[in-house]
Length: 242
Image 1 (cartoon, rainbow, N blue to C red):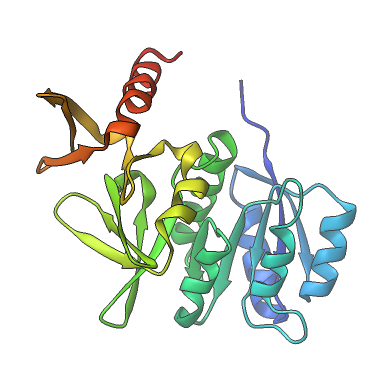
Image 2 (image 1 turned 60 degrees about the vertical axis):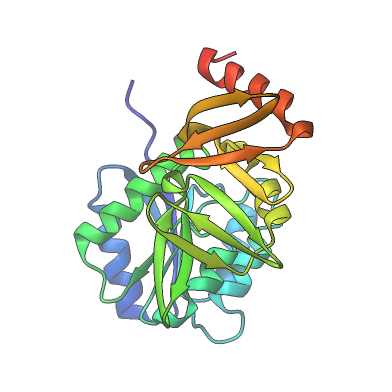
């Protein structure tokens, strides 16, 4: 069965950029109707009156900004996925703080936009899939796929994301990530650790002490006694699909 095509809304105060993005989207076979708006305020009106599958949103606009509109949409009962399309790299972390699916820089290339649409389709069919996490290192912002993260370690009010051979510090407490990433298979195994069930390769027990092995190269993590039983049940359910 062919998947239904997306109904997209493009919001940008610059006419040429608005028209170009709408044109490129109209040529994508995964996109059906393309609505357009030249302001975030008008875009909000359209979203309140119409069903929209995805919003392609400029960041810097007069009056209500794209980030502010995204914050409003996050309070919708079923907020649409958001792709930011902007000439400015500096707002990437803010964009991903409001759970944007992607962040595309202008001038927009057709193949890059097609990748953004692919990510939206993935989120629509499997919520949480292909989520990108904005991380900073040495003044450079890059994006890490959440599916690559093996475990997360608490470091005060920050958290360190481990991806197998590399790690990144983010300004988000572990408790917040535990709540937001639960549906993506991240579970607490220790007061200072979350682990991705998809990356657990082994569960080891020695003299009542439980550990899990995640990632490549393998890393062994201690499971606290209070979380051991819950983890085993979750892993069993995850493996059997129950």
